[in-house]
Image 1: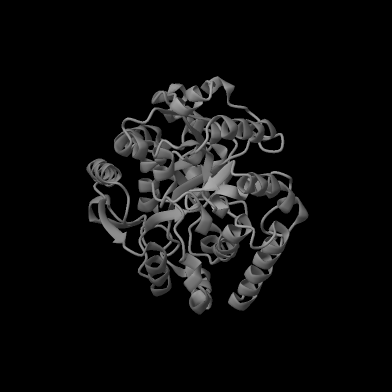
Image 2: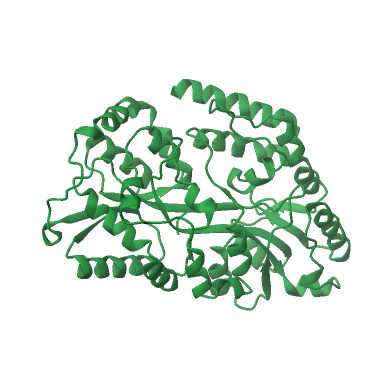
Length: 426
């Protein structure tokens, strides 16, 4: 699964009005394509380039199975620059019938009216949402309460730990604290017992810190869609992390000389890493001698918290084959096909029943990520998230380096982001 595609709405300003017109024209388009016979219909399906070879093959297998069952043909449309090219196609009326939608970009697409509501199709086929992990399913629920996508898979964050280093320090995995307060104390103990070792490595990204920032009740975006990074509650929530970095208990992967968090953790000189489930395969392939395990992240301000990154199959509101498009979405996200796809592509299924069928809840490495899907915060925060994300990630390294205070840095990021938002006209 591909994550955190950036830049989609950085090019939006020039074509916002055009997209609104496209959305407003939905009512006059062919409503369902119900007069088509399956064997005469070809659906165009859009997705980004960059998925793993196994995931790409698994997707092709699913398309073949669908065509065999229904007679409906599939034409793949692979985008090299997904967000920019999809934007162009939506404006030009040439976008695929169904396509990937990352949760972070969903609000803007929904607002512009280019996605088809799936509610009527779901009602007709008695499609229910109860089997899906709620955070993944609700990520594609619009501000109007309608459903605009079905999540195909997801990733959450987990706490990776180096077994050898824990043992060297005199600890076991069961000694890892379950709360953030005790965890910071534990990091200090590890620093004392393991000279030259970094207790915790992390990425200075909004997508990694948002669940922490919002753990005290504040939101990174206010009710008007503006940045709210300088909220006192958000500053308070981030203070322990910033203080830990200054004390050397936590460091970004760049601060300790690595190009990626996986490389830093794989070096054997880091005890903990908070990364996504995608890191599991990377460690297995690239650091075969490393002994490691995973567990859930410590609670944050008294509550279990995490991030979930998910992608949906969604329908183009301008599709001329809406019934057939829904058939494909329903097929791809059914229990049987999701199980097949998850096994072949090595991704986490969004259906709880499929996770149980695949014994993921009992898998020592994957269980923490699956458990988090029940309570994680979706990577979604209004139509201006990309602008806010950029400003946060531009300033946060300077905060960690002590060049600016946490309060001053987040105030500057908030003001800059809101200036960008105003200029963009959102």
